[in-house]
Amino acid sequence: MKRKIIIYLLAIVQIVLLAACNSAEYDGLTEEIALLEEEYAKVQNENLRLKQEKNGLKIEIEELTAQNREYFEDTIKPYQYFNVNVDEYIEKVKFLNQNPEELWYNANNIFLLDELVFENEDIHFESIYTCEIFNIEDTGERCIAEITALDTGMLTKIQFTYYYAEDGEVSDLGYQHYFNYSDIFVSAFIMLNSGRDDTDDEFEYYFERLFKHALYYDGNAWGRNYVSADGKYIVFQILPIGLKD
Amino acid sequence: MRRFIYIVVLMLFIVAVASGCVNKDAIEEMQRVANEIEEDIEQVEDENENLEEEIESLITDKEEAIEYNEEIKQKVDGINEQKPGEFQFTFQEYFAQILYLCRQWDMDIFNGPLASQMDNSDYLEYVFKIEVNDETCTGIEVHVFTEKKSDKVLQCTLIIYQDEVYRMDESAYGSAFRTVTEIALSALVLAGTTPFEESEITLAILNKIQENDIATCAQYNIGYAMEADDEAEIRSFFPYK
Image 1 (cartoon, chains in turn brown, blue):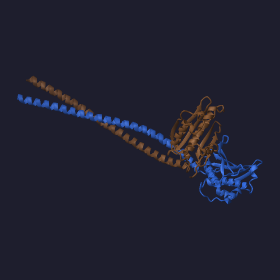
Image 2 (image 1 turned 30 degrees about the vertical axis):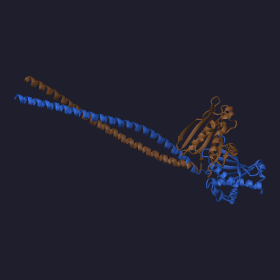
Image 3 (image 1 turned 135 degrees about the vertical axis):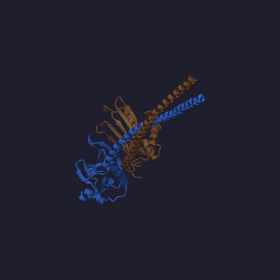
Image 4 (image 1 turned 45 degrees about the vertical axis):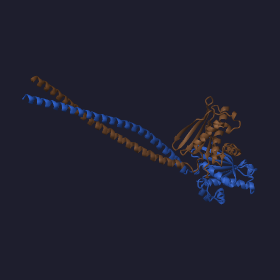
């Protein structure tokens, strides 16, 4: 009998001891939770601060961007853009590159690149599309076309920069490419601007005026050539005249 | 008595077991809460890390916007600033005005403007020719000097080669040449003010400028000088102030 009671009591003691251990663990957990809650509050506060900082920055950037746009628009004179969309223009240039017979009757003799690759970079409120026409590493000759548009997509500038060869000699390849591609870029512009696809007499007249005399009155465009002061490159640009319709 | 001891021991046993079970459940619940909080902390920490990255990127954007703001503001200030020795308009505006007037007067630009940088200077020189609408006359060469960066016009010079100068009489040729001069001068008066619109500019005003009438030159901010040699007659217009 006594033995049984002792066994029961021992069992009880064991259970009580276990309960006591649990209670200690419980207390430890309570403390840990308190610490975690404290840490959570800290990271939440940090989160709130960061969100506020982010929103503050966003507002500042929005204000600066609005101001910058205002300034930028102040620099754009009225009518200083062409009624030509840059994507359509680039498509047209690529089309003529692929279909030279649209421009030249003797297209078989025209040496062109297989593909023109334009890289686009958005700089503030303008998009600049750059295309390397040629880069002759042996001579150092290279030519880059640069098309500029407003963020509305309206074309504002077509530019060709031709870097002379290091020895000052113009290679046949450079010469051919330069003129073939300036033909293509000028023609694509006239075609889109005038809405004509046929290289008829009127087209030829416009082309002649813009290419040779750097002037395309009806298309509200003029051309500008200038040679860099160091004589290392020449730039040919087609720009809007800014005439009111 | 024995039964009583049994009952007490049994109750103690039940209480002990129940207490152990209650504690175990509570511990499990506490553990769950602790894990949840840890997860929440991790989540917020991740969010904070992302926010920090976004903020860094926004700071870069802001710096770029500030940099561009200064640059574009300078450009706008440059456009609006009235520097002595330069007109308040660019070559492009001047040329547009020339084209507009040429169309009105049935004149033509024979050669488009060709720009070249003057030596290593900050100036550009544009050259184009206004064609007199007559086969016997070759036209007047117009040289426009601009500041390279702003492209603002500094001076406009008309070159009339000597074999054409004699035509500047009362004949039809002379009249046409005078018209070219008037176009170039009118464009200077109009480029910075009311482009492409009907203006108050009259021949009398243009003549007064060419006579160097002080009040008129000051009013329109255009000075005039003329020189001639064996080859050509050179007429220059420049800012008066």
